[in-house]
Image 1 (tube, rainbow, N blue to C red):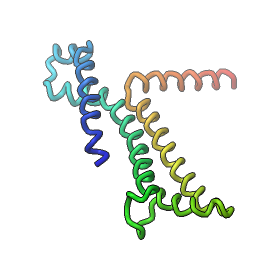
Image 2: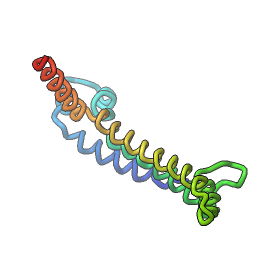
Image 3: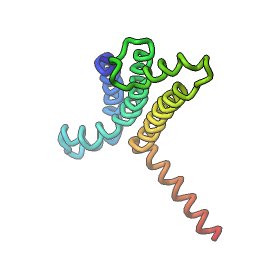
Length: 152
């Protein structure tokens, strides 16, 4: 259900990127050079349009995990025999008053680390999937390598 609700957002985002990439000079140059429409889409448009979509997908995976955990926490999630972070936190939350904090804290930390990990993956994917950012990163790494060699 979460993926279905977010599908129009991804489609709009991809359409906007494709429309902006379509006007770029390298796409026009490929068209003038005689590259087929399918070749232009496959080699130029899709690789350049996927970076923000993949980054947003990674962030939305973390959001979906949080939403599922929240629904389980309030009792609207998956049934009792299935272990879920939200239900684990809810069961441990009842014993915090008596001084037993660990049944609730550890699933909460696991949930936080997972969501943070997906956010980091999303930002890394955005940098690595965007050709301009990838070139800038490669140039920065090359400059650092040259500086290390000069210092040695």
